[in-house]
Length: 608
Image 1 (tube, rainbow, N blue to C red):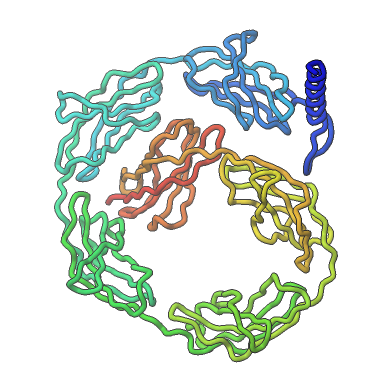
Image 2 (spheres, one colour):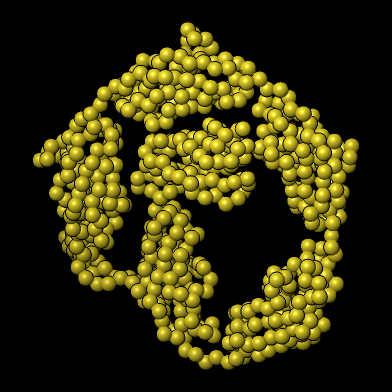
C-alpha cells in the first residue's frame, strides 16, 4: 500500500508538470493565439546621462509586447549588476547617487514568459560637487501691510536658497523657508502690520551650505480700516437670482456679501468677490417671488469695515407658459428612430424648454420621454421597437412651470426589420496613454450599424457597458481609474437594435498608468502691478509641473499657461492687468506616472 501511494504521488507530479508545460507552450483563452512563448529581446540604444550630482537619467528603445523593464546597475563595466528598479516606460531616473562617480547600467525586458537578456551597458558619471558662494545684493521690499518681498543675486552652484529672519540686524536669525534654484525671490506673508523684519540668505546644494549673507530689512505698511461700501443696490435678474452692486472702496482687497429675509434680521454671508474693482455679485438659487435684503462689507489685508446700509430686491416669475406647442408631427426615420416636430409657442421668450411625451395609444397615458432647449422645435429619438405605433404630445416649460400637454398629437409606426444578428467584432485592442483614459478599437462588422463596449474588472467576471451606442469603431473610456487593470469586449448591433444576448467576442486587457500626486499649498502673490508669483509644495519624484489659470471666476475654465521642470516649485505669470484677480491650479508629473489631477485653486490679485 505504501509503495502504490508513492507511485500515485509521482504520477500526479508528472501530470502537473505536463499541464504546466502545455500551458506555457500553448497559451489560450478569449482573444489568445497558440504558439511558443519566448522571452523578449534585450533593449537597444541604452543611454545614460547625468542630471545632477546625485541623479542619472537612463533611456532606451522600447521593446514591443513587454510588461515592464528591469534596471540593473554596477560600479564597473564588468562588475556585479544589481536590480535598482522596475518601470513600465522606457525611461528611469536613478537618484541618491554619489557626486562625481561612474555608474554602469543594463536593461532587461520582461513579459509573461519571463525576463529576457540584458542589454549592452551604458555609463554616465554624476556631476562634480562644490559648495555654493554666499548670496549677494540681498534686498527687502514691503508689498503690503502683511507681506515683504526678499530678492538676491543668482548663485549658479546653488540648488536651494534658505531664507532666515530676525527682529533685529544683529539678532538671532531663524530659518523660515526655502526656495529652489533658480528662483531668487521670496515673499514673506502673514506678518504684522507696521512691523520691521530683517533677512539673510544662504545658498545650499548637495555639497554644503554657504555662510549667511549680509542682512536686508523692510517694514510692512500700515493698514487702516476700510470704509463701508456705499450706494449698495439689488436687482432681480431672474426668478431665482439677484445681482448686488456697490461703489468701489479704495483700500479693499475683498468684499463680503450678507443676506437676510427681513431688514432687521440676521444677515448671513452668502458670497464674496476678490479685488477692489470687483463690485458686483449675483446671488443664485433663490426662491421664486421672494424678497431678500443685502448688506456688503469691505475687507483690507488686516481689517473689515462695518456693514453697509441694506438694499432689497424681490425675485420674479414670468409665469408658466400659457400655450402648448401646436401642429405636432412625427416621422419614422428607421425601424428604431422617430423624428418629432412642432410649431413654437407664440412668445418664443416664454418657453425655455420643450417636453416630449409618448404613449402607446391616442387616449392612453402619456409619459415624459425627453426634453429639448426652447430654441429647437424638433428632435430625433432612438431606441424604439420595429413595427410599433407610437403617439406623441409636447408641452412648453420655463422656470415657473409647465404648460398643459398639446391638444394636437402625432402618431407614426416604425418600419419592420428582419436583419440578421451581426457577429462579434474582431481585432479588439485596448491602449492607455494616461491614468484615466483607455482607447478601445476594433474591426468593422458587416451588418452592424452600432457597437457597445463592455468593461469588466476580471476576465471571467461581470461586464458593464461604457459609452452607450457607438457608431465608430473606436471609443475612449474616460471613466477609468489610475493603476487599474480592465478587461474589454465589444458587441455588434444592427440597425434594428438586434444583438447577441451573451458576450462571446474577443476579450482584451489593459492596465492604466499610475497618477502623480496632486501638488498642495498652492499660493499666488503679487510681485508687481502686472505679475503674480505662484508657488506650491514639492511633489516627491516630480520631474515637471504645469500651471493653469482662470480669470475673474474660480469656477471658470482653467487654461495651461506654463510649465516648470525639475525641482522648481515657483512660476511667475506676467503681462497681467492691474488690480485684477486671477486663479491658479497646478499639476505634477513624475518620471514614471501620468500627470496628476488639478490642485485646489489659489487666488491672487495684482497691485496698483
